[in-house]
Length: 535
Image (cartoon, rainbow, N blue to C red; front, side, top):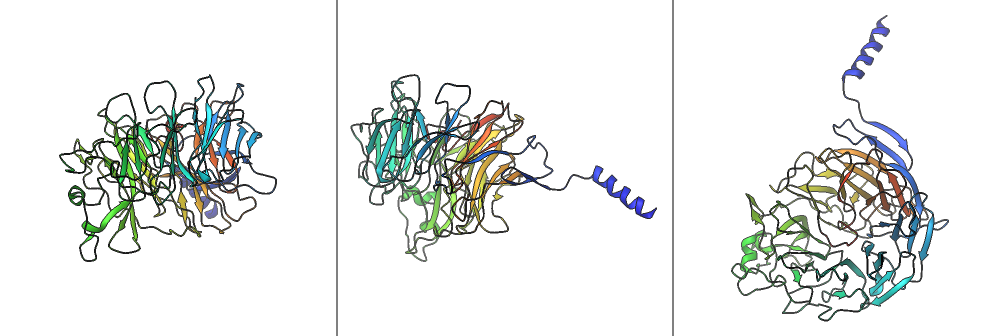
């Protein structure tokens, strides 16, 4: 009888108390289900994986986000992805539709761009690769044109209508080159425009290389044309117009430094206004702490709903008083169009969040480099936008305009087995309840024998789902360096998550119950134009 009442008590407690975390196996790995309010109905379910691979191995995937487009006019879309080869995959099955293997360019770093270059009814595919190659192809895989822009790897790519004349888009590419900042603007036919490339000069500003998808474009001054914002491998950010001329900075604040690229960035705004820091031991962090923007893309967004775009950049703040420039933290900055720091509506970003977390590991031989691509969206539906970015401290951060992280943010990506870093996230309100979910991939240390994960967080930064990504094929580690892509790739109404992995090809996950989802940030750099423009 005593045993009976013990069992009865257990049953009653199970009915009353919240359910504990439950581990379940599904498709590509283990899912963690937690008792969290407002969780989307079901977690990601593996649909297929290893597409784009060969029989026994997969090419290494890098930071290139895939695109989704209908290439043949049937009822469902195809996936375009690139590692070293470029390939098109059937969205339902993952079967290869075509592969472009003849590129001399090597690896593909920036996301696949889509735009109508030829003026017909179908978009073209644009990729930028190692060796300085930019290639435009039809959706059938035929080369439209190819240009070599020097010999350095191209890491920045966007395709957008810089002129604002709706005639044809322009292609913008940036090179990973330490000696100067090389940025090209090409016409839709692949011919370099007059006034380009732009390099380091006293006219446009101080700059060095572009080591990630740094460039962004948006309408900052109210005319028809878009302006280019390009962080570089120093503490300077270039601002350029479509014709290559420099974008003006506020002359009353930055006397004698009239353009964006001549105004350096420091942690301490008073040093920034003065225009120089001491950079010597004993002078204090106010003089010595400044950000490097080598891997820091710009994102453009109206953060407070006043109708004007702001510029958001996450910089690697380092101590310039030491010869080796030690990294201290990755911190967010918000600038106005005139290069001043954002200060409006009680939100003063002339001082920024500091000491957000020191790097766990910056040795690329052990773990690949995290890219702090800022995603700027309204997570909680209050009309202001939050700044979300992955950091080398092993966490995903989300800052509100009050310069604090709310709820459970930041989210610790690391696992008990070792370090994991996170990709740029994508964001969608999956169940359309007014609160957005944050979705990203992770990767582990090289040679660890482990796979990274596909992670879904609530708007408040709580873990909803963590699904192990497929194991490596022909290598000893795998994960997702690139931002996933949200799209409907099959014949049902729900969204899928498309993940380009390091050594497991392309994997696609169903998101059950997401038919009415509201997408806020679809793919790497926001959209298939890859211009870093928020919703």
